Amino acid sequence: MPRVREKFAMQVDSEILSTIRSFAQSEGRQIQALVDEALADLIERRKHNRLRPQVMAAYLASHEKYGELYKKLAK
Image (cartoon, rainbow, N blue to C red; front, side):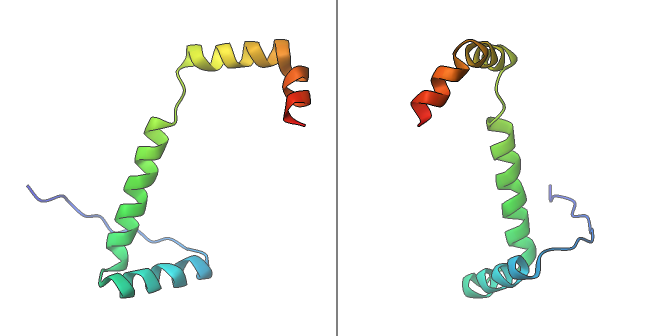
């Protein structure tokens, strides 16, 4: 079954739009295909970059206990 497409309007930085137009032209694709691809990539990255609550809690506890050490090691 084909996916339903929905129109929406947005504003984009002119340099970004110029670059996207250039990519689309050089790849022989439509801008909407590149926007679909970019949004799908964003969704995937956001889904996979979420930390589990217990992992974040362990990190925060560690940072509270060893924060100064981490700063020194970073230097």
